[in-house]
Length: 111
Length: 108
Image (cartoon, rainbow over all chains, first blue to last red; front, side, top):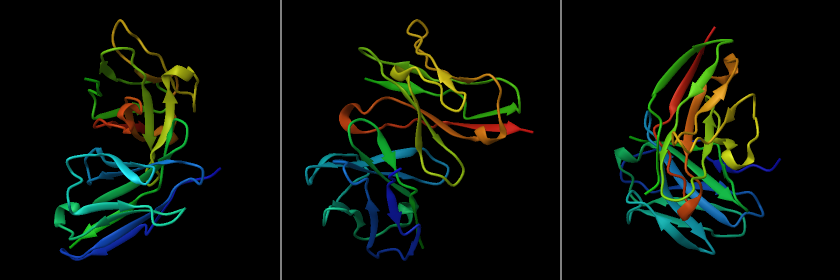
């Protein structure tokens, strides 16, 4: 069964550095999402993406965040200048007809 | 506005005992609800959607419009059911708004 994949599984970075989290959605899906989960808290929606543009973004998704689909397979989340409070699990999801399928997540640790 | 609440943060149940994870909704229009599960160190995955009326891993959930509830039930808990469970509204507005979830802990 096809799955959403994410790399890396764990990323450690220093405050102020740029990070790029990568996702490979399921191949025939057209809708893409990023969510995050700060340790001990609920999963929060960040952004949705369709037809090469952002469909919706949350208040969390400020100017420090950006998403891109640079080729036919990858979907990336970039954080320009990381802050300590960006430490979280970041989940990518993709959707075909109805259901969102989630990736295993990338744990981002900002020191 | 659509809203779901899961009143229990943690639910501990003995193996073999019945399980009921509560979810109440506040909706305008006809609700369509899902249950997601996150096992330890695994990805979030869809467990049930109410319109399919199916049973997955022994779990069922019935939409009760009178009580505005969509409780998740299983008659006999198994140790592998230990996980975080999230009741969530559908992909309206093309995003999932997760609640705080309920951690189910199955005691041996």
